[in-house]
Image (cartoon, rainbow over all chains, first blue to last red; front, side, top):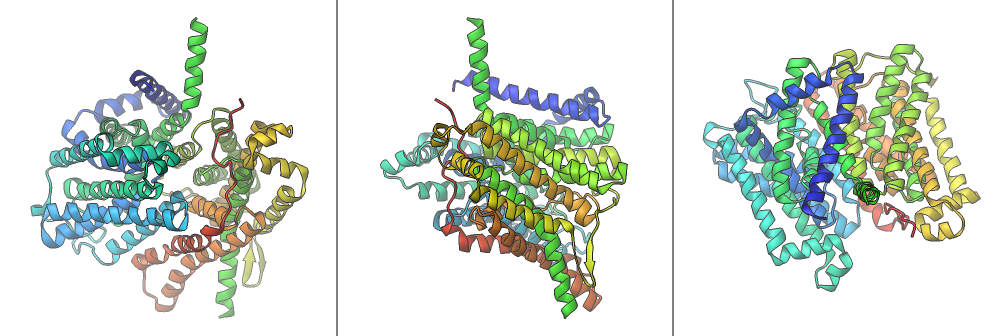
Length: 329
Length: 302
C-alpha cells in the first residue's frame, strides 16, 4: 500500500471515530462542538506535558506492533507495563538509581511477555487468552502489593515514592522512548533478524523455508515487546507519576491503548511516535473536557474503540476506493 | 460446613451463567468460522443497557430482553465487519471492547453523574431452597447448551453451519450460503452473550459497576477452548470456571467474618484465583483441542 493510501485510510478512520463520538455526545446531552474544541485546544497546548505523556504510549504501541508484524497478537502490554512500573518503582526506591530502575523495569516486562510466548509455542495456548488472564492477575496482585506491603505510611492509598535522586526529567523520558522506537525501526527494517520477523508475519511457511522457525519469531518479538512495555511502565513511574496508587488509576489502560496506537501508526515505529503524540493529546484533552464540560475522560476510550474498529476494515476501504475510481472513469 | 458448601455451590451456579451462555454463543459463532473476541464488550454494553431499562421501567425482565437485543445488535455489527466487509476479526473485537468500556462509562456519568456504579435496580426472581439458591437463568444456560449441542451435531442446518467453519468452499458447493450462515451465527452468539451480560446486573449483582465484566468475556473464550467447541462441555466448563470465581468472592468474606479483621488489601490476592485457575486449566488441556479449520479467515467468493 502506498504512503498516501495509508494516510487516506487513517484519516477516514479518524473521521468515522469523531463523527461517531459527536453522535454519542449529542445523544448523551453534551455539546459535541464545545467538547471537541476544548479537547483540541487544551489537549495539544502544553508541549512538554504532551510529549512526556506520550512516552509510555510509544512503548506500549511498540509492544503491540512488533509482535503484530511477526504475526503474534500481544494484548498483554497492560500487565507488561504494570510489572515494569512496579519493579522499576521498587528498584528506584531501594537503590535511588534511575538507570538500574529502567533496566529492571524493561527486563521484568520482557520476562512476562516471554512467559506468554512460551505458553503459545510449547503448549499451543492462544496468546490473547493468556495475556488477558495475566493482565488481571497482575492488576490484582499489584493492588494487593501496594495496599498491603509497599504502601506509603504518609499516604496509605499510594505506594512508596520514587526518591528525587531517581526521578527522570519529563522530557528525557520522551527522548528515551523515541530512541527506543528508532532502535526498533532499525532492527526491523535494516537487520537480518528484522527481516526474518517480518517474513514470519507475512508467511510462516516462507520463514521456515528461509531457515527461520516461526516459534523463534514468536519468542523474539514478544521479548522485544515486553521489554518496550516494561520500560514504558518504568518511564511512567520515574518520569511522571513518581508512585502508584492502590487502584492503579494512572497506569490502567495504557497497555490497551497501545493496541489503538499501534494500529493507528500502521504498526510502524515512526508512525507509532506520531500516533502516540496524537493519542496523548486526546487523553490530556479528555481530562480538560471533564473539567470544563463535565463529559468524562472515557470519551478517549470510546473514540479509540471506533478508530480501531474502523481500522479493522481495510478491505472495505479498498472496495470504496475501487468504487470511487470506477465511477470517476 | 454444609452451609459453606451450599453457599459456594450457589455462587458457582450464579457465576456459571454468563460464562456458559457466552461460551455456547461463541461456539456457534466459531463453528461457522467467525471469531468474536468482543464478548467482554458485549457483556459491558448489555449489562449497562439492562440497568438503564430496568431503572426507568422497574421491570428487570424487560431489562434482560433489551440486553439480549443489544448483544444481537453487537453481533450484527461484528457480522457485517467480519463476514461482508472481511475485516480483521480480532482487531474489530478489540476495538469493540474498548468502545463498549468507554461508552458505558460516558453514559454512566451522563445519566447518574457517577464514575463508579449505577443505583441498585430490581432483579429477576431467584429460586431458593433453604440455604441453596440459584437463578432460573442457570437452568436456561444449561438448556441452551444442550439445545445448541443437539442443533450443531444432530440437525442438517447444524451440519451446514459447521461446514462453513471447516471448509467454506465445500459448503458453498453444497448449496449453503456461507455469508448468511456466518452472519446469523454471529448474531446468535452476540444475543446469547448479551443475555449473559444483562444477567450480570438483573440476575445477579443488582447494579452496574465500572469493571462489572472483569475479564469474564475472556474467561468465556477460554471456556470455548476448554470445551473443545462442544456446548455440553461448555456447561461443565462454566461450572468449573464459575466455581473458582465463586471461591474468589467467598474466601475473603469468610476470613473477614471469622477474624473480624478488614482484609481489603488481601482480598485483592484472592481475586486472582479465577484467572490463575483459567490459565492453569487451559495450559493443561489446550494441546488436545481441535479448532474449526477456517476459523477467523474471511471467506471471499471467487
